[in-house]
Amino acid sequence: MTASQTFTARRLAAAALSAAALVGAAALPAAANGAGPRGPQVEISKVQYDAPGHGSRSNRSLNEEWVQLTNSGRDSVNLDNWTLSNRQGRVYTFHHLRLDGRSTVRVHTGFGRDTYRDVYQDRRNFVWDDREDTATLRNDHRRVVDTISWDARHHGDDRGHGDDRGHGDDRSHGDDHGRGPGHGHR
Image 1 (cartoon, rainbow, N blue to C red):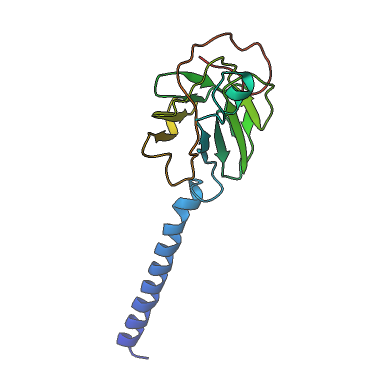
Image 2: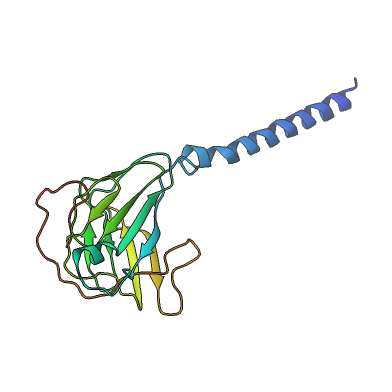
């Protein structure tokens, strides 16, 4: 092998190693920062804003109005001090609720006993306006995690948010008396 051939062979080997290093480095940041499929991702997965029936404001009717949150990641997410609010500023604050990976919780408007699958705002009036409203989910740092809006012409977006949802006008009442996970509102 001549000196020229040796030099060319070394250049080709160096180029191949550099290309392999670039491919490996490009794959590292996604895995290193948890941006892959393992990271927790909580979203508003469905909303029933128009309670079925005639909207009598009975507790049963109030609890037929709900927002569903889904954690599509593998890891559980602590929802303590996260908030769910409507356009008029009515806010529900989560307390002592951990949403397991690949699981769902429904936030009902009326009264009930909180579980890991259902939590209750303990309100006496509907929260979600069936004509036009926005549901906003914020984390404990007040950063928007997800939002969904609807109006008379558009009933949710392409993520499958419900066609049926609630009314409006509510006044906060009571406070959290330690009735279980997820309780609280402002």
